Amino acid sequence: MSYTFTVSLDNDDRRLDRTLRSIWKNITLGEIMKAIRKGDVRVNSKRVRQPGTHIYSGDELVVPWALNESSCHPHGSWGNIKVIYHGTNVLILNKPAGILVQPDTPNGDSVISRVRAMIGSNIPAAVHRLDRNTSGVLAVALHGDSLRALEDLFRNRNVRKSYLAVVVGKAHDVIIDAPLLKDCNNNIVSVSENGLNAVTKCSCIASDGIFSLVRLELLTGRTHQARVHLAHVHNPILGDRKYGSFQANRLMKNISRPLLHAYELEFFNDLHSSLSEIEGKLFRAELPDDFINFIALRGFDFHEI
Image 1 (cartoon, rainbow, N blue to C red):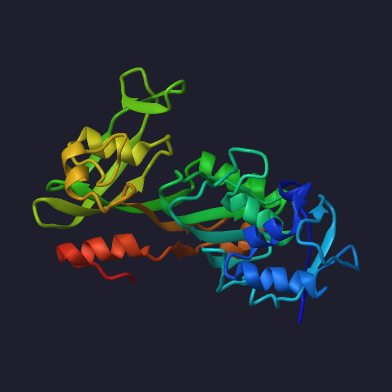
Image 2 (image 1 turned 180 degrees about the vertical axis):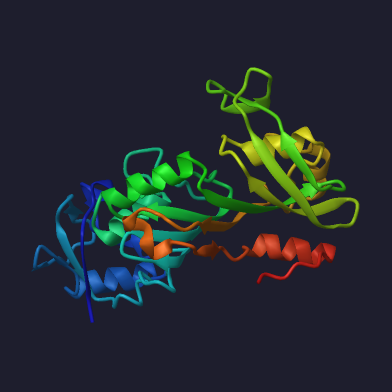
C-alpha cells in the first residue's frame, strides 16, 4: 500500500531523504534510504533512487508506506505530534513541547510545516499560539472558511481555553486581573498599568506547600499571559527560565521547560457552518510524560477524565 502527497512550499528545493525524514519521524532513516534505493519512492510518477535528489513545491510524491503507518489519521500522530481530531475543516492536535507552532526560518520545522507537508496544501493555519516549550491542544484550520470562522471565535473569546501548570509555592483560587505590556525588542512581558487588559482564573487542584498543581482559564489571550500572571502572584511556573524562580529551577534542574500544558479547548454552539463538526465539543490533550512524572512524584491527586 502507498501514500501520495504534494510537496509544499516549506519543502521546496529540498533533498528527498531529508524531506521524508522530517515528515515521517516514526520511520527510521535506514528504512527511508532503502525504499529510495529500491525505487519504491516516485517523484512525478518516476522512480527516484538518489536520496540527494532535490524536490520542489508542487511535485507529487508516492511513498511505500500506508496511510496509517505514516500516522496521518484521526487517532495517530505526525512525527511526535498526536492527532486528537481530524475533521473536514478543522484539525485538533496535541502539540509536544520543544516545537514551534509556525516556522521561524525558511523550511524550518514546526507544527504547521508538518501539517502542510502531510496534507499537501499551504492553506492549513494555526488560529492561536502556544509557546515553543508549552505542550497541549492546538486548533488548525484546514480551509479558508474555517480559518476565518476560527479567527473570529478566538478574537471574540467565544472558545474556552483551559491549562494545567505546576507552580512554585502554595497556590490559591484567585482571579488575576493585571494588564500586560509587551516589550517587543526583548520579547518580555510585564504587568503594567499601560498594558492591555488580561485576566486569568486560577484554581488550585493539589499542593504540598512547596509546589502546586493548578488549573488556569485564560479569559484573555495575551502573550505569555499565564507565565507572567502566575509570577505576579508569587506562584511562578516551575521550569520557567524567563519569569520563574531561579532557586526552584536550580533545585529541580531535571525540569527542562515550563510545566505548562494547554489541557482543554471547548467550542460552544451556534457556530459558523464551516465549524459544525466541532460545535459543542470539548477536546482534551493528554498530559506529556514530564508532567505526569512530576505530579506523580509529588503525590498530587489528579486523574484525567
